Every structure is written in structure tokens, then in C-alpha cells.
Length: 416
Image (cartoon, rainbow, N blue to C red; front, side, top):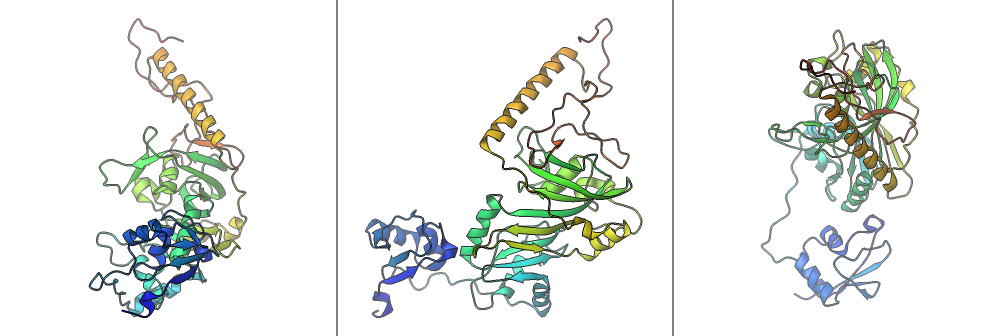
């Protein structure tokens, strides 16, 4: 065919495509042109960027002019794009109610508890299934991060493939600041501290549950700050995840003896308060601060869900006490990583030497006991939880745990 199929095309690289690879640009804007064709055009010099030859892995810069030869589209009879699903009136209303703010690059939602972010086995309704409501005539918006089904709060949706890549880079690079509110059982002894406990999938759960794994787990760090307390019964805490592991906040708080109220998965029966406090999970993505493609940072706060707000009132907590933004942590450099690794290895060697000397399990010197969990449970955790100024990364030193130990055989006294 003659006509537009024989015309050389020119495109100006947009701001949303800053830094994207050439082959990814084609996938976003000319999806009918396959990778093989793009590679052939690049190899033969038919694709030009500002008049110069380019490879498939060339990184593009906003404002550059991209020359694309004619043709290259998939042959007729190929797969047709997936038709959009017709949403019900109830789904359209729910999608509209969740919106906190939106612009050309992003849609920010306040996800209610009980609504999954993505579909799964037996999951009929989820945020991903509602995204067609936000773009009846344009490209389908995309998820760039997730919240657990029972966690409420700020959820960022990217409007375009370009903004999805931009925001995803901010999340993966940890420059996005995520602030959560939670009600926890008991009261931590440390008002402002850091939890550093590696996490891994718990064997035998099909990946549905995580646990602390000192040997094979991935590094996970959470900063927490106690905002208020209801005697020794419960505390209102602010959580700032510095890594993004699955169920990180829930596992970390349960590991230090203060499970999130309503989180039976990780806290068991000890995660529920009696009286008028709801049995739903009390974890809320309160605030998100992230760079925006237009330049000015995007800063969004999500109101509490009804059950969380009622529990706050019943426990005597005032939302205004959590309005102050916590100071940001100090940058974690390569030197910090080496220092932490060196200190951790030294501590392990020290503990092993102690085990060989004493031949007992669980003895420790006075003063090496970890922080005690609240609520009268008497649980302790020496490793992974430490106090210090914001940004501290070095785990608190701890020796072997104190305890009754094993009985000493007659005639053999432990070495000192």
C-alpha cells in the first residue's frame, strides 16, 4: 500500500521517556513493530537519533528527534489487543471514591482495607481490575507498587508507560518516602529506633508468609517511632520502611514482640485487643512523598479508614500528634555496608568462641539483654533492633541470649 506506509516518521522524545532504552521506546509507542525489526533497522542505520545512528540499547534523552523508517508493523491476522472489560456501576463508583488526586502522570488512590491490589486465586475484585475506569479512551494506567489486601492507604498508579517507568525507578531506588501508621500490641522500650532483620519466604507456606532468616534472608530495614501509648496495652507507631520486602512491617513488628493489632497471620491470638477495638488489621499507608516527572514533588496523605479512626479515638490518640514529618535517615553508603558487614562477622565469631568456651546454651553477661517487649509478655530481641539517632545503621551488639542453660555434667564446671 502507498500513502502513510511509505513515509519516514519523526518523533520527539518526551519527558516521560528520559533515559529509556531505544527498544523500550518502540515497545511503548510503536508496539506493533517487533524487536527483530527494531534490531534490523538499528543494525542497518535506518533508525537515527538527532541524525546519528543508534543501537537498540541507546538511552534516549528528552527533546531528541527520533527518525523511524516506514512500515515494520505486525502483519494482519496477528493478536488483537485485549478488549477493555465493562465495569459495573458499583465498580465505577468505587474507583471514583478511591481517588485522592490525579494529573497527567499519576492517579493517587486511598485503597480501602480488604481490597486486593492485584488479582489472585479466587480474587474477583481488585485495584488492577478497576484501572480501566481511569482511562476510557487512553492507555491503560499501570500499578507501580502494591499494598497488602488488608493494608489501607496511599497507592500510586501511573497513567502512562513513561510515568510508570519514572515512578518505578524512584521506588526501586528508595528515593520515595513511604510513611505508615500502625497500632501495635504493647509498647516498645525504644521510642525511636531501627529494626534490621533479614527476611525470607517461610518454607512450606507457598510463599504466602515471610519470616526472619539471619542466614539466607534479604536485608530489610524499618525505622519506627512511637507517637503515643495507651498505658502498656497498645501503642501508636509511625513506620518508615527503608527497604521494600514482602510483609516487611508486619514481620518486623511481630519479631520484636509488638505485632500489629489485628494481624493474626504474624501475631496469632496475641494480636487482638479486647473490648471495642476492631479485629481488622491496623496498618495504614498514611503518606507518600515522591519525585514527579513535572519537577515538583508529589506529597499525598490518605485519611484513615473508619475502623482505624474509631480505634484511635477509643484508645485516646489524636491524629494531630502524628502530623510532624520525621527527619530523613542519613544516606547509607558503600562504606557503611562494609562497616556493618565487618562488625556482623566479628560478632558472629565472638559468639561462636563463647559457645565453645561455655558448652552451655543461652548464657550471656549482664547488660547484653535486648529490649523487652511490652504487654507483659517478657519477650526479648537482642539482634536487629537498636536505638540511636535517625539514620543509624549499625545493629546493636549482643552476645548469646541469657537463660537457664543446659545442666552441667557432674565433675565438669563451665570454663570462665
